[in-house]
Image 1 (cartoon, rainbow, N blue to C red):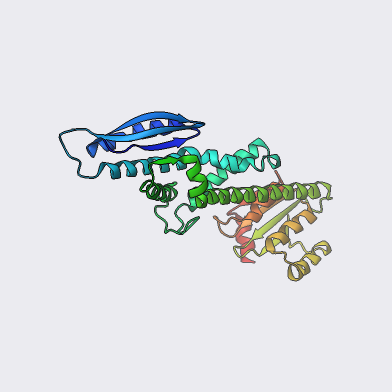
Image 2: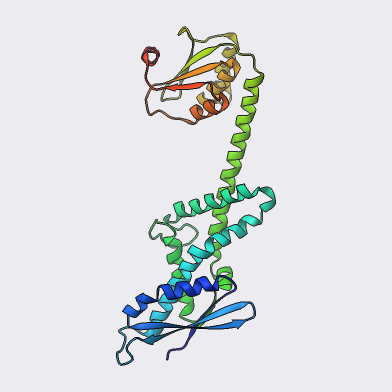
Length: 308
């Protein structure tokens, strides 16, 4: 019998055992069968792994030691990226748990997982290697599998917890980067929601200067504001905005929102030059003037205004 290779862990050992057994049918196709034994060493549970021939009279085409190490490397990599990854992400998130509610921590986890999935196929992300497949966690899994295999070529015992800490630092850095990105995204969303609340407050305290306005938005971002009679809105309280957009960092979208808050109309009809025209400014206007906004993508006013 070949020397036993032991794989140990402080948690999820049953999951490891199930994964080892669930994939062992592929081993039988290679002429061998997996045999497991269990031993305890402090808080670590080791699974001793060995292979025996399915047909003792037959010889396998490949060395059994190589088959075993390849199989264990693939299983450990799958365990880490599939079963342990969420645990590791939550552990990183918990370092800042006082800053976020339970709901926000869940959102950070989901965003971090999405970030990892989107960046998995980017060459060199978190490593010095070239990227493999961009689907799911396959690139991370392949890189971990290769490192586990290299380790097992020189060692007959592997503790997953320690291997993660000392041999997969780049992988843990990758998870930390995903959490940082998720937190940045959440903080930006927080700031945006606070910005919307502030703008709503300004609208509420502002005296309406018009019952209805029509906003014609060009794909370039340039806009025109008309009153209910189709006349351009050109009052003294808007003149300063043109100077602002030239002398400050305000763009056309900022200018439009500022102008509408100044006018504080009871109803806003936005006319788009193109039916599929979208933009952050439209979404912001709808949130700030909740219930007052109508988005039109084709009417007689659109035709008339877009000819002007």
